[in-house]
Image 1: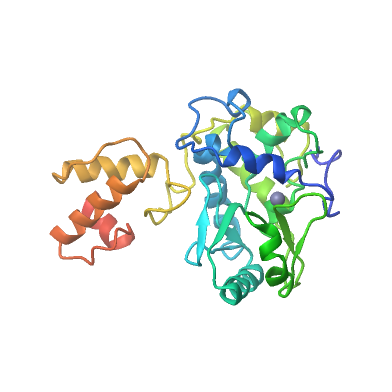
Image 2: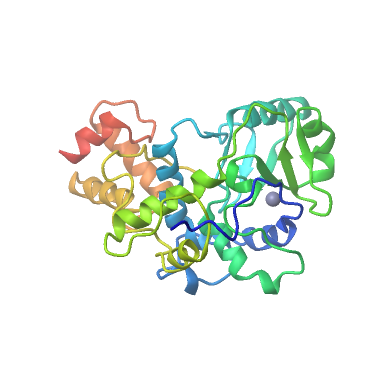
Length: 301
Ligand SMILES: [Zn+2]
């Protein structure tokens, strides 16, 4: 049985309704809602940041070169703006930002299907149609929502980033050399769900149907107990959105054990960054605040 009969389309979405989402995502919300996605308040998509980070990491395990982070560019990121786009799209973005010589405020780039689900659940409160999870260009790493869209438009269009009529903050990258990641974004969720629900498995078909929709709504907003980084640790550092999860909690507990004062809340904020640097200094490592293999090994043994 496949789960993809109702919605599975490579057609571009005409309306993204991003203008309305951006209003909410500009609220300062940090830390995930402690419950299931379906019960989470529709205030900002940051309330599913924990689950979103697991989905992004799971997607990267399936397809390591799927997209790249652009957070080192001259950008300001919102609390729910995961700074991932495909390689070609990033190069184009970089050129546009260099040409204008200004910082770009990004309120959304890669949007996980957990974030899209929240928006979709709330679609009747929106004046514009909301793309079902897995059909938005934000799920393929080829879309951004930004501030000062009119000011950026000529710079972006020069490099293949085009505005979406009727949705002012939204730009799609149409410069070519890209792939469609939307079904992989859904597959990442299906795998993660199955790893955590061996007795209630769903089809891993990359399609978004009623079965996947139901499972997504019953998923914990802070992320699943079995995280995709359990077997292959992710690099932890101070980032936007704030990294959160079981691995951050373990890091903080290890820092405490090493005699460094830090709160153990499972979120990598400025205090954790400071604590990591202090630990690295103590051990004669480069105090860059980045928890890669070396720092991890010294901390976790
Ligand atoms: Zn958008």
